[in-house]
Length: 510
Image (cartoon, rainbow, N blue to C red; front, top):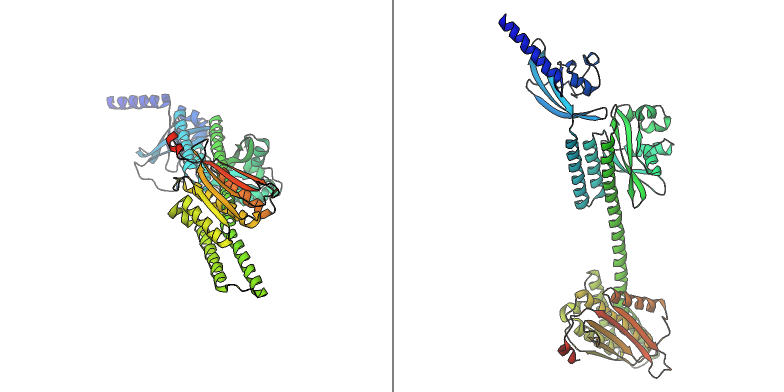
């Protein structure tokens, strides 16, 4: 009897401890139905014990899978607006067979905060390191879904012209869900996403499933909704520079509603999604801008090199045609040899452009020797007096500066040959007398001058030269005087701050 009384007292004490526990405690039968729930558990579950006994537990998912004695399971579940952590252990109890004991309590806010911070940090890292927008947004949607405990999550962008919605990042949604929603939109279904975008505010739509199944405008998604327990829909606008471009949205399951912390976290992640989209758009614009600039540069290079050679080639072939037609006594072999040299030169320039390399001579000889070689070839071909003067044969310049200055001189000499009707020109390359860090390249001819660009080709050439000089912080000036002026001719001057300054002794040699 003494032992019976002691055992009864022990069980009474244990019951008192269970009843006074601040954590929820419950015992489930083999099928997962409540056998008993302590007072704390009843408060957490929001029901009295009489309403819970015999009901299926919210802490176990698929109960058809057999569980071995001693197996432990941890997890979280949302009960109303509260996230609850639980621990399940299968144990043998007297007269009850293999039962499950559950210990559960509301998730510590600090734990939720840490989880949200980790998700936010991972997303920020993905935005910084990943260059594929769809991958980043898929990850972001998955982070939001897992952290908040949503059934689905998606990043949705709106087409500004048509209003169409594009699911560019998603987690937990069927592959064709975006296409189905677009059909619903076209049929006039009231979309919370569209409302959030149009009104630039957070929209929470409750009892969504029931309302959508009763509305024929939602017919494209009816078969999906019938198999899902999606109930509450939340949409947070994506804003880029005060402009709404889409929404971060998703479903919560039946009986689950977002609390203030959920919405704050989703809004913060929506800002991250907006940054990712904005960065992608900016990179796309930069790529287009770079492509345009590359085409412009190629056009400049074509004009400054190949076009000049082809122009000279056309003049030579026309002159040969006229000479042969008139019966003039000319050295045909020599003329053909010169034409062949022009063709080979054009091929060399074209090959350099295709390989996207600077003129071959620059890499081997430097700026001034390359200009001397080029000018000498033009002088011999065109019968002009062309001279190069320089105070330093081997300037140490950046490759891009050398390339652009070479092209500027080539274009200026081409204009002398084509437009100036000159007998000669002088190319001067030297440090500026007023600033030793500035390199001055001038081309002075004794031609007829001009009052402005005579045709589109010449205008393009001047623009090309100016752009090349300005690209290095320099300035291009063109001065011209008409043939009636005793000091007639044209001077093209490029000034670029590309040299290391010299002391007085260095400048004295000039």
